[in-house]
Length: 316
Image 1 (cartoon, rainbow, N blue to C red):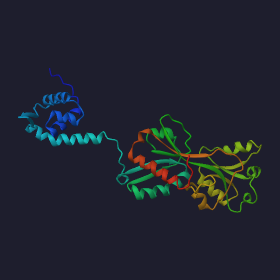
Image 2: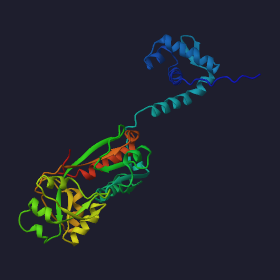
Image 3: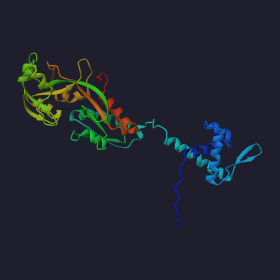
Image 4: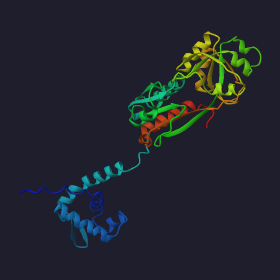
């Protein structure tokens, strides 16, 4: 009866020892090259002789010379060691020009619109082989990051998964956006005047209330939300053509312009400070830890930072 022998155990240390011995033709010098003892190197040579069934190095006077088999193995041994070194070395070299593929991002419409021009500009300059798919916030980000349906989430990160890595990018405040000539632009904006105006709310979950309603309630005020839209771009477009009031994110006073305000500028909306204390809005990015060391994903995160953190923009 035939008995299958177990697969041989591959010992990478023997490949290193073989390469050193064939390069140095000396047990002592090979041991010094690998920072080990001559006795340990002698044991490695004995194992190699048994495995390869060849003496490899033989005595010739005061020196040791390679056998024909050893000479034939020298280049291959060196190549194997080089490949092992590349395999087990950290991937520190990032050459964006060699990257190929598509990154899938999930972001709110306003964030996606702010990101797209800057990302495309950077990709054309640095990584022309990269393309982007920007999805609306229709997926639950935690599971979508975990199973690879999206590579990165950008926006207000409100889910807390143990493995998700999150980096905060910019801190923003909420302001009122109205059309030029809107009644609220005449005279100081008070909480009562703001509450009396007709509002459009932005909520992908269809909610009519938010932090502004909480702040108004503390002053016994209530606003009327006539319509809820899933994204800021649609809400801003409505505000630009009617008297409804829309809340939009903006950079803090004194900070430079933010790419997130480009849509406001394009629609010609007038921004007014809200006379109430509202919590700040933090825009961040989240990714699964399996991408943390990936060179392509590192370039992507760098591109996101450079796009949203424009000179003078706030950081948190």
